[in-house]
Length: 529
Image 1: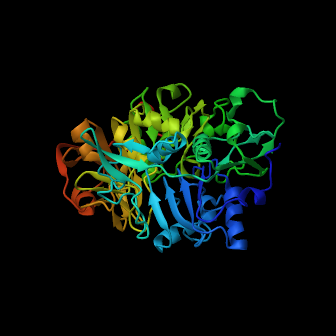
Image 2: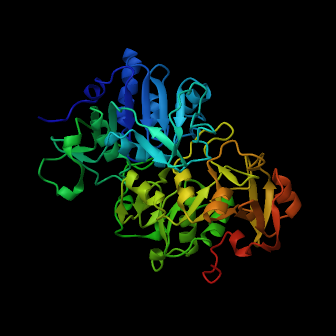
Image 3: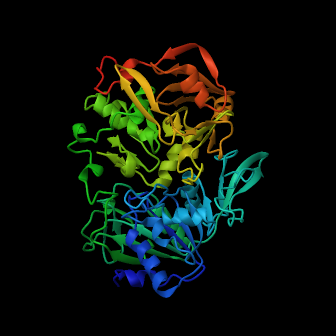
């Protein structure tokens, strides 16, 4: 019997009080039509109500690929547990995502888990384990001694516990059932076998299907096309039809934000680095240049969202990354794309010209196993105690994403970001940096609003090496806090650095001036690199 059905049929079986899970990484591999179909059903019927939603990662872009915003409706959503959230304002309307509005209004129970936990937890649900046990996140925001991952006052249940096992502390995530899940693939046959030939990521699709089926739930897939059964090689089918109940065809699904389809995200063939987008001259390019000097060759390096993911594009533009040496720089992200060049912005999460893909759960096995020895991650706040925050600050509630797992397990940590935020403007002339307008918000603060990772503790207790790189200053992070080791040419130490911090760092007796070529708009000579 064929498993193909209409969108309306696919969402009709969801009942009030149930749990619905969905795959998706920003715009990548998001089953947007299914999420929209559920939201539309609620608008029409005012049913189902009081659902719990589980998103291992922030799903959709809250714009054309609405994702989790499609179901952000009072009455429909009672609780959400997500590895990250989509937070930027809409570029045309200036509106915040609907889900962020519900969180700020305390209208739902909102929780955020590190993506590593949200991925690995699915494995425990699938094998009917009592829960997921880990040391990663102790002392951070997910620790019940901190916030326990609670993002609204309505979120009063303790979904994460601190337990003792053989005399040591761990975080424990008890399992609970998933009744429905939405996944996405490229092709399906009538039996429901799924292949992903036009998807830039695999993410948690298989893990969600297995966990949902183990709970006796229903798995629904959104695909671009139907293919005849027995026409594909077995190696191309990543999810067997045995684990799929319904299939909905959506022929015009977007590959990712602003991209209907682009073969450069699927294959290493015809690599042309000169076609990559350019980062305009400004703080991000300056930071990217200084940061890539710290990346060790022939070392698997994992990049986070933001200024850190600009780094490979800056390298390519400068000629520091080229066809002759690309094998010397092994870049990946938390979502499992290997080879080629990590992309930035709304296309972040996958690589152009990848050589291999692994699923999200497997990628976090690699991360937690310490196989990504170096990492570059962006920061929102850094405090006097040596803790970094990206998960909750001011009016922003993005969650940790993969940050906590990545930072905990890498040997070398490179944190990148502007020195201040909120209106910062800089320029440079002849390699000399000028602060034209200072940002309104200090990012080096006495105490971070959230502890996403305690960097100084990792340095002191586990021998990690850590740097904080901004457009005007570079700090070494020690077990007892920050030491200023470099400042940009033209920068006044007191006015532009120390006065813009809310605490006093150590100042190196060998304080250096950053190389002038970093601050020039034209491509630097390779000899300088």
